[in-house]
Image (cartoon, rainbow, N blue to C red; front, side, top):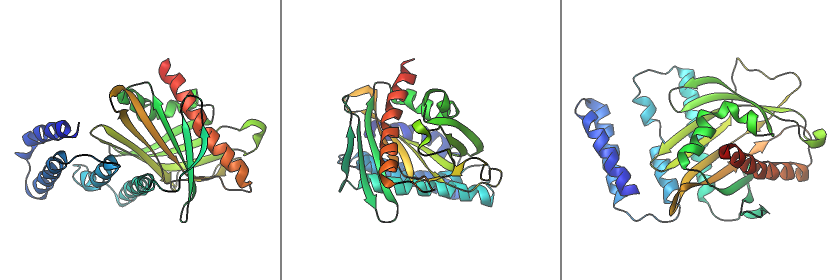
Length: 277
């Protein structure tokens, strides 16, 4: 898949190189050469993580025609930081412990990180092509409250370039109102490199959306979802969701762990139902 992707990218970029000058041309040539070099290597474990991480820099943003303000650049950098941190966590395969294994094979793992706390990792296969899953999670993210009972509302507050958005999310009340109403303000970064898509995010501050009455402002991140075609079955998608949340307030850790792992299992179930429609 990677050699074909490299050739396609090279063919597409060649037409534009003739019209580039200076640093823009040098940068494009460098990226093309790096893609060609990667195409000659045999992919091993975690290769897709390394490829996405190397490509996910601010270079593409800096080559945009439209200049960004200092504040916009700050949000772009936060999104990139969330992506890089998330991939580093997923790359480390050690010390993951099984939390839940569903009958259909859906699995939730967890580990404790010194600088982050406890993180959860959902591993599932969705019987839909990657483009379909990507469209639902990125292009239609504001509709998530329509099909995910754990989400009351997702609203895009601001779009910055083609990869970054600021969102406000309200969590739905849990059964018995154990957790209480929470909301989040997040910066989200979406990157698509060949056959791999990464949707990363982390909490941020956004002046026009201060803390809301009746809600506890929780924090998330680094967090991300990674989408890849299932090897040998491109009509199916392997989804990995790294979840890291600080719900704030006083809550026993046992309740938090139970709620978060169940939230991931429920998400996979409701996503399948949504896509099946």
